[in-house]
Length: 162
Image (cartoon, rainbow, N blue to C red; front, side, top):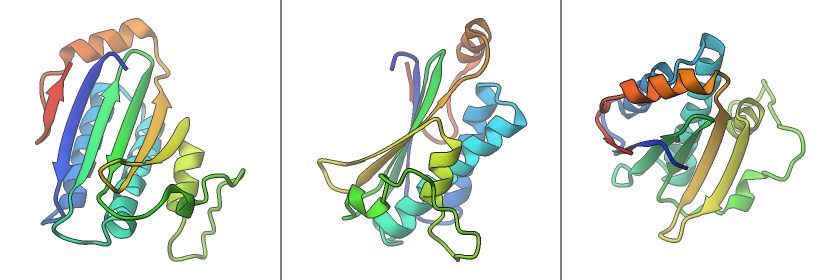
């Protein structure tokens, strides 16, 4: 993907969920998401991050989570990488319809991501853990996104590169 990349590595310490949310909100703002797009985007990133922390890293404070935002004029993709031992098959991605049971206390994240994102992929990382990739098509004119990308000037506690 040619465009911009913003990466951050988060260790589970005070307000680590808040740091992920702040970065997600900043990217959504830079890309000019309307409130509905921002909600879908934030929920998906939050679900992927929460799953990486709880299910992937088993809430282990010594294991980090990498969150990589990459965007161009057409698409924004977020990769959330954990350091756990789960296999992609454990996520039941082949189910044709998302399973979102409101009476369950958990287990809705994958279904929500499949419903809200334009594309979702999960792969096993060579160094261990899973990478959950969620993609969203940008729904505005290319010229508008080009201006938004040019105004971007650095990050929310992370690294940004072109």
